[in-house]
Length: 58
Image 1 (cartoon, one colour):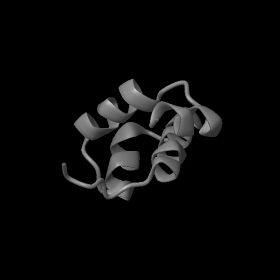
Image 2 (image 1 turned 90 degrees about the vertical axis):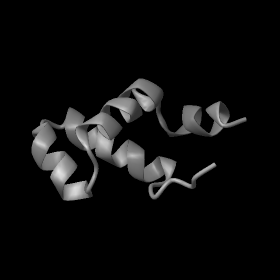
Image 3 (image 1 turned 180 degrees about the horizontal axis):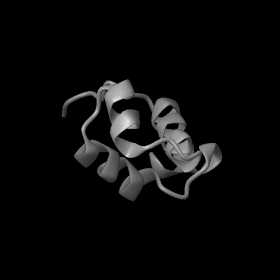
Image 4 (image 1 turned 30 degrees about the horizontal axis):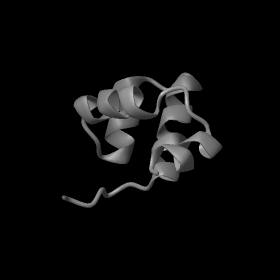
């Protein structure tokens, strides 16, 4: 399986920036991701905090 370029902590940082009001196209461009990747991250990690992320990987 391919290793991700981003750690869970980095993904949570990107999701927090989007919640902070940064426009999606600018956010994706700044981090070098596609809007589809962002949508996948939202589906997988949306609503989680740091403590829940470590439990979901088990």
